[in-house]
Length: 156
Image (cartoon, rainbow, N blue to C red):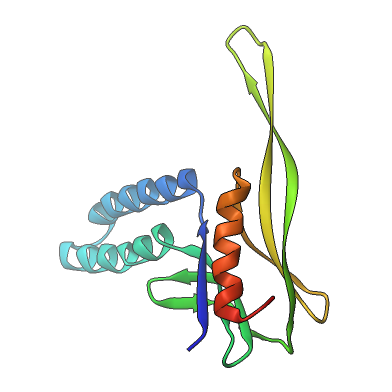
């Protein structure tokens, strides 16, 4: 079975996840005032089931070479959010060198710009669609991971 699953990071940012937890806690406390105790506990339990799905939501790309499908979406708590896309053939996997800049400000309002290079790997299909796979500041790491993907998919 030729299935490749690449984790691309969290789907929901950390500040939003923390805010959601605080909102659920505040809502649970308010429910204790508004509803009778058994109903407030049941409602709070139902609301709290959303938190793990939000907290662990991950962006993934799953390439199934046997069925010739690519799923580029979100995976959370065993569920996939998105639809797999059929493809005819994979044209190539390529790596781009991208210049990145980060601006940092100090307390005295001085500006410090840090410029780096990042290597990003993409998968290109024969119909022209491109899918982002991985990125890393070291070219060797990206090349190492891309080589494993190429071997598994039998791409030159």
